[in-house]
Length: 130
Image 1: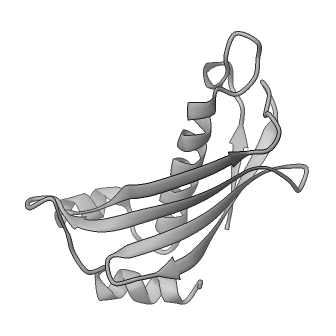
Image 2 (image 1 turned 45 degrees about the vertical axis):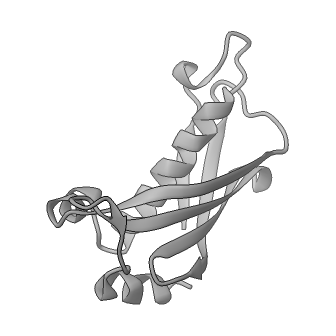
Image 3 (image 1 turned 135 degrees about the vertical axis):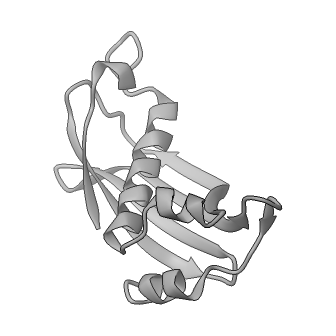
């Protein structure tokens, strides 16, 4: 799935280059929309006391994005485990990868703050795109 991103002033440092932490936000938005595209909203999951929390994040910054760039985040599932989904994400400008991330998210019970198995309906929806 591709998610469009426009780089705004708030995403950049004083030199108009995207601040490194902004990439994390871009990837987060794309994963949220990936989940929404599969029929699950963060709000509905929260109402069931389920959340996906980032467990591990690796980012490779290849070339800088700049103010007003039009970018796209490509999000794919690399692996699904019992309580973890590992995403592979690429930030693209003109179809060229400018940043790459591997993000592991864990399914947790919000009341206990403990990992839980990914609910079957979510697993089934994710498996269909894997």
